[in-house]
Image 1 (tube, rainbow, N blue to C red):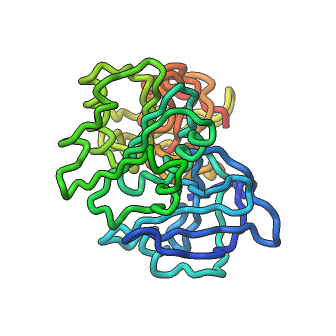
Image 2: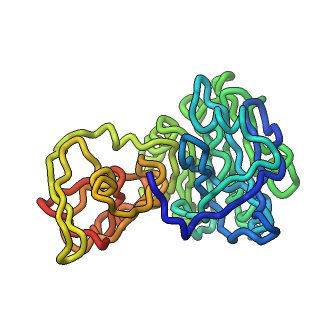
Length: 324
């Protein structure tokens, strides 16, 4: 697993605070007093965890001017992965390495917004809600939890600018997306954008509800925690990749990824989540037809066939020529 050094930023953990049951917020500041790159709501960073490598976390800072970055990490139990290490080993004063912000979940322009957060999916949507409130645009934020004690960012969600727009839903009281559809979802409006972040099942349920009530597909933008397309092994035929118009050619077997083949060949590529959800390995395609299996590129971008995620996508054509 590699990442080009140019995008790496050394930071220090300034503070660590509890943020609802099972959640921990970290404030990260640049070392040597410099400022961090500014970003827009929906952006995320890679946090490089010792012995584990990069893990992706949405930026949820109250201010995005580069003074600090805030991330909120939910402890996944049982777990020995990134959340376990952060919760049990990170401490204020620790030095870390992070990536520069990337944003594959931007806030689109609209006259009205409906935001749906499943659990820790609140992190990118909170920053969006605060931005929408500043612009004085109509919105609702629906926050779904297995227990309201696990709610993160309650002090920010209950401030006057957001409080009247925020709705907490406790699934233990049958107030789930499945059992109690918000009225605003039952009446589609052309100028409304729906944004969602949460587990696969939560996103799929929301999509089903929107289809039932005849929303347009382009009215929904979402970010999910994992990529269900990775379970699709249909037509995983071997194919070749070629570096540039006249570069070397490599065979990608049925059980190999493009990224694995390139790394084995010593090709320096950016690689992070390895699930097609972060976008760090997106590469231009010079020729050939990709078989898109990621959750990052839009349907329009996939139809253009000019980019591919190296970590999970494959090829429909015998050869893919990559701009590497």
